Amino acid sequence: MSNITVTFSENSKGWPSFYTYYPDYIQGMNQFLYTFKGGNLYQHNSDNVSRNNYYGVQGESKMTSVFNESPLDNKKFKTLMLEGDDSWSAELSTDLQTNGFIDASYFEQKESDWFAFVRNNSTNPAGENQYAMRSLTGIGDSTTANNDTTTATITFNLNLGSIISIGDQLFFADNTPPVTTLTPQFCGQITSVTYSSITNTSTVVVDNQVQGAVPIPSQNFYFLYIKDAVAESQGVLGHYCVFELTNDSTVATELFAVKSEAFKSYP
Image 1 (cartoon, rainbow, N blue to C red):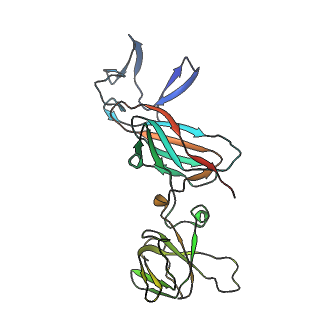
Image 2: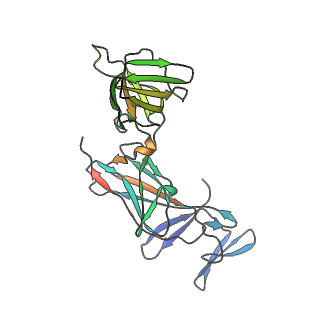
Image 3: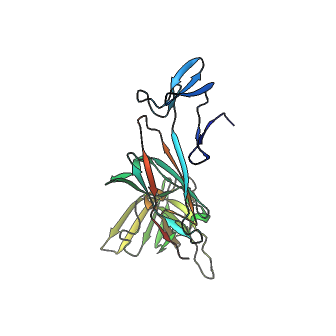
């Protein structure tokens, strides 16, 4: 483990912060903090230098806390709202689901808050343990299914409308009786969806060269889809949610409060 510097608070009687910089000597004087490193003298909390910068090395600030209201209830944590003067990136983890994240660029400023939806840290293609969490949804039986070297083309005798989109992941499963449990297999990422009102037929084209894709072995299979994990923004499920905020700004940044829109999840 690398060396760190810790701070003690007389008010809270605890150790609230940890710093990655590690001075040779440290001294407080005249309401300023001074450190020595490599024979050089540094004044901290100066307005004339870049923030998150120690001894010429640019770093980042991190803060970790937890949402734990009603700890016995399963909850969906949908959003983060930051009350402050800048956005932060966020990593979220719960006791029930795969982790979530928010890039700093995803936040939009609305009045005094920065607001963003929580995205899922999920694999592509989605693993079996993610089907329920990411809402694997049925489309129906295909009419035809053909594979070529780079794509697969599937037709359905129905109007799919807007239920699936380009970028969604397409799965197929054998539902021939007496099958009682579907075993979905990933066949590709959707690149095109078209509909013919003359034949009442929808045609779906997928890229079958993406990692994990399996050729469709038969024309008549049952098909399902999962929305893109980032675009779907379903949030993360858990009794509690631990969040870590990161800011790499070079200017002074204040963060006053962190909030989340969460609601009870019913099985």
